[in-house]
Length: 369
Image (cartoon, rainbow, N blue to C red; front, side, top):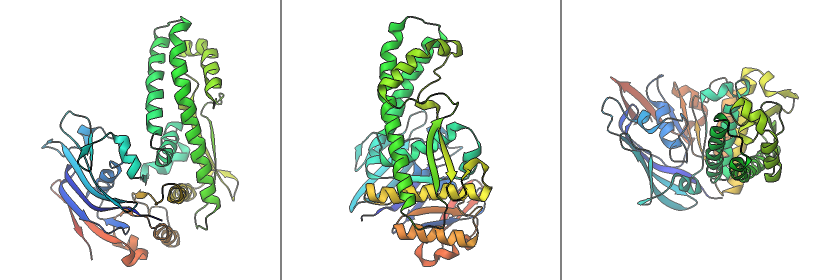
């Protein structure tokens, strides 16, 4: 089994960090300090070493350190399956994000071919009780960890859907205008659905084959509004054609993978996730993140890089210790944040530890020994 980890991470004018550098050795990384010190900003920087907008879904200009607003840059040395890669991503003021891999400009999706990054952040704690959009995004992040091109299928589907929605809002009724767009949507939708179902199957198998202190979740893909959820290309073309009158009245597309929802049931208790306690909901999320790592270790050849922000919240000491043991057993580099070093005591020398301070709007990072 190979390893996937960062050897070095450097930030320049990134959020509260004017300049920061972490030298790493593949062990989990415990990052602690008071709220607002800049701990999550480090995790966000690592998340941008994967395709997409990162764990905060921020626009490039939102990331640049204020008041300078000079743009920002992240540089990292990545060990991926015994190969070293130099990664850079940055944005100049008013520009979109750029990526360079081993000195060559590359598309964001190329990051997903050499680095797999998964994360769990406090905003996800309400995942099971809020709207379907957040659960779709959570699922698609896991799907992308298995299949990086999934992001391209989603973007292509959404682009075609926006064009169809414009026709609907303009009350265009000529079928010829819709046929070509719906054929495009159906092709991308079939890939999206196949990727999602494949990911759910891998996650369930990874849960079933593990001895873990965290509860297993039975997962299902369902419609967010009790409408049919066509899986195949032919079925979706027919559904889009049949629902045109209803879509015209609504002014938007009401059938397709953008209406999907992720359902989960706490297997042992037979209780839907949205009816579980706060602690059980957190444990179910952690269980899925760990299953994602186990499945990726088999599929990609190495466990992903984990980003676990305030992960100790709602976990007692026994569950914390179990989580740390599983991360170490996977051989995963996990970046974890908390307010104090006592939250990572169970890790001991198995982790590198960094303390983050903030003074007059500038964050500083130092290794804690």
